[in-house]
Length: 254
Image (cartoon, rainbow, N blue to C red; front, top):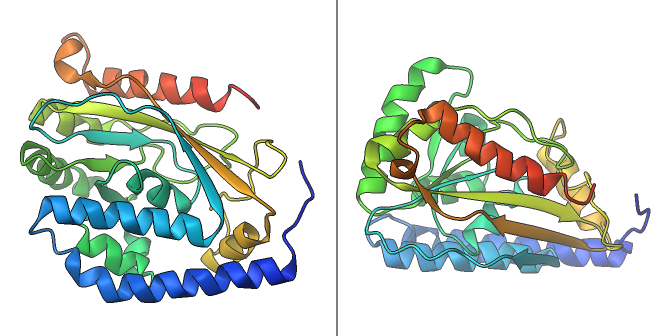
């Protein structure tokens, strides 16, 4: 693992740029009211790119498969860092399903609420049915919805077992599924667990991220698939298809 660190001046410069981004974001948050999907999507792309630029993070995104349906897409990805949301939003704007704690975070929580994020208690199975219904309605209305089926963050060097429950919404809405694989690299081009948000506080995670000399995120797209293409599979089968792609990508250059 690379031991290269950003200079103290660079770290504080990044924090300063992030503070400016937070101020601008707070000023623009009221635009994310969900009433105009095109405007909301443009704003989400702008906010995602702005956060990555403030922290000097390079995003390398693969080619997005074409999506010609009027129905929204269920977007699923592995979960490594709080940066995942910005990386995905900058190229594939969507509402997120997120853990309850994020709803209380400054700026990020408010941004999520205004962008249509649904905050759930990941330890309660009673939330699943109404959440699937809400996702299904959003997908039928043409809105993209994203969630992390691992349900918690990993180091980024491996993949935690996927949970199948929320894949049911794509089946109910007959919506396509877009699977994404996220990988994080340091300034030497090596895979790094440092950006991970697993078992650390938000301030500690932020300091680790600004202290890295360079971060590059790769975002790989699986071929878009529809649930109708797998008539013999239930939500567990769809979960297996998604998990297999992510596991293969994450293991490529360990």
